[in-house]
Length: 261
Image (cartoon, rainbow, N blue to C red; front, side):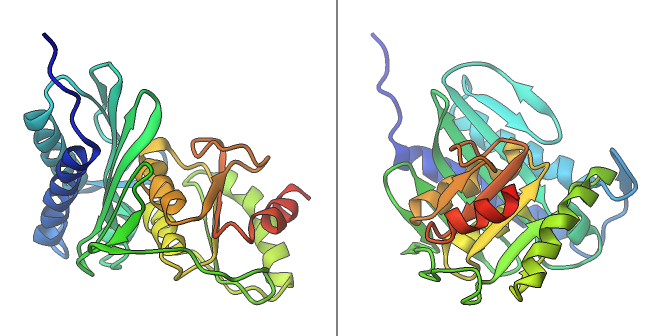
């Protein structure tokens, strides 16, 4: 006799608990980081907080669901199966290491390859973004939705990011196109929060080269459940592609056309 599959709400509760456990660690060490080292480049930093926060996330998840797989930025993937948690223990590590308060924890869950649960916690603002597949998106328990800005030159507020290696230079051509239109552009430095900011209408669009599944698994679900659209640069519904393009939906064709030029 097999046990019943957990409900999405039960899974979301675990995601929230895990994200908040990581956020507590962020605040504990904020301004007191003792070890900062480079990973792929001098700009790609990791602190002891990244590792401790991921261990906390894994403990919460595996205490609740010991047979589930977990993919984390710091420790890679453990386990196999239909349930795969995709976690970033500290998105915005460079910001965190400098004391710049734009960072978060991100906990997403795929069920059979479908993004189904997402929780992102910004501890400096006590903001918890959540979503379940088909269940809508929320900020601190209140429903959220994307903006209704219809065009880039309304003007929209747009965010982007750059990978930590020198390939980020190829994004400059897109940045120039946006600036020539007179569109305000931001580079906050935490992909998960960029997606959440579009989800709740603070921003209208976001694109970036070189994100990883742990950066966008939870945030892309939250944005889609808030009524937005997430694709690759060709317009295909793949948030894990080389470039992620995320908008309020109305802006999507226009931004894709610009990025494809």
